[in-house]
Amino acid sequence: MKLITFAVPCYNSQDYMRKCIDSLLRGGEDVEIVIVNDGSKDNTLSIAREYEEKYPSIVRVVDKENGGHGSGVNAGLRLAGGIYYKVVDSDDWADGGSLQKLLSAIRRHLAEGTLPDLYVVNYVYEHVADNTRHYSRYNKKFPAGEFCTWDHVKRFRFSLMLLMHALVYRTDVLRESGLVLPEHTFYVDDIVSYNPLPHTRLIYYLDIDFYRYFIGRADQSVNLPNMVKRYDQMLRVMQTMTDAWGYEEIKALPKGLKRYMFHALANYMLTTMLFVLGKRSRERVAAMKALWRHIKERDKKLYRKLRYRSYAAFAMLFPGKLQTAVLIRSYRTLCKRIKLG
Image (cartoon, rainbow, N blue to C red; front, side, top):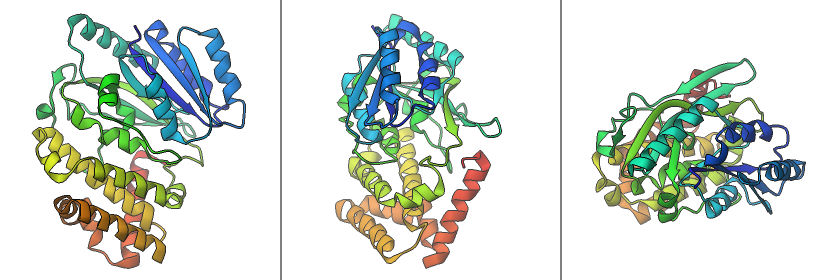
């Protein structure tokens, strides 16, 4: 029985995928690694096949037409045989010691007959250019080394979020949630970090710096020019999230989860406004208005919550180009704090 299935979506990843895969192989026979070649035009597929041949009981390769990152996550989830499912992007990697601690916890909980729906771990921004790091930890939000429910989770504030890097879902929970990500779309990680959460009840936080997030490539999706260019994709992602759970559904959730869901959605909306209005034009303004209109028509209470009682409401106080300047300045301040780009 495999404890974790790691999905590694790859597109033209020949220059860095080995570091990622090698870090996951330290899990040995307890892990399954599904390498998804998403229509690469370089040697990604041949490298993946090399690992599959060398580690046939651990590595599986999916070769498919290009469908984007979400398509790779979907393909991995369909094939996953592990109790837990974790996506690791091909330019990122897992800390070896932390991986062993995570596997040890799963073994122990499996033997005890108490498996959580969700493991939460820390992640680290690895700034390769100057060999510095920024740590995102949750030890002030979750009790460490204990089972807990959402009622035990403390309030999240400002930009702190449960990004996909921090989440290790039980595979059957993801499947029961109906998670299917849109294809040919960046930023689908946000959907993974939000939509399935109400299907989780029992949580276990490990205070380990598990996920290592590479920072340094000019083509990364978190770079501001790329974000602004791909605004239509973020609009698609944001609409998917606001459609997933209505206001009354969120209000009925356990206290800690209810607070977090509204917090997360407000942050995602603010980010969406940055994507769309970071380069102002009539087309972009109209697209943002269309999203607000869609939310209002579908769920007036959720609309009012996001529009008038969230972080987005602050940005709405500023008119036109001043609003754009405020959004960009806020994002750059965040980037400077964590050296995101």
